[in-house]
Length: 331
Image (cartoon, rainbow, N blue to C red; front, side, top):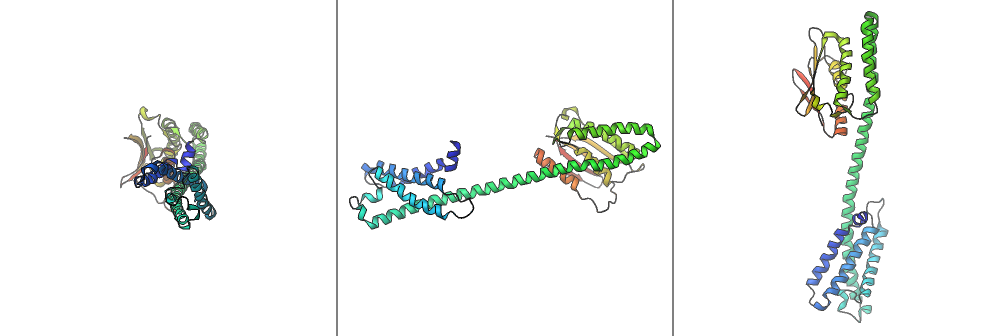
């Protein structure tokens, strides 16, 4: 029923069908036929409305000239059927009753009036269809955009593992030669990291607590790799650990910080993860190093798109001469 009311715009049709007969009734000098004229006009206009909204669709491919022509023919038939049913062809023929079948001018006037009302209803239908088409196009564009972002999200998750694997295996190879005992501990943390990746590879969201547990294992691997050239600090209250976020977000941000900044014993890279208001902030000191081809910003762009897609809110990026910060909304 709701679909029928929506398709035929029944409410709007009733308003239009009541308005015009009411205006005609007020101008009718003969009170004895006012109700009859009102009823017949209401039925005719409302029937025309429903007929046009059910027959003509301007959104379909091609031009509905045939259906438009048919709507005018049906409008005349509707007028005749309702007029004869009520023993009155309408207010316009009432003055020529008894001779209406032979009055060409009366018929011409009636047809013009019917055509006028039918044209007005068709214009209203065209306006509704145009508006609905714009909405459908906007929804389709939004759907395609979301599907594209989802595809990018999936592609990003697939890209994380090979890059990370290359770096960790290189470090493990060096440890195996120089410090077998530490290599064993390194393998244990590496196993924890990959266990997390495998468990969450099909998930779009994880809890902040899960992501931080993963980060502690990941940062252990980085500290083994860089030693005291990398300083990290995590200060996140337990109250926010149940909030959700896209997986591997923190790992990508830390990896970007290591990739784009120089670090040494004398000039260590300092990375802090903490809560500031409604945001989880990842901050590092700026000491940029020359990277061939410069920064593509694809990592930050993908994180931004993932947050917009999955959480409906974008990340914030702040940069000054000393620090670079990425603020992740806590929702």
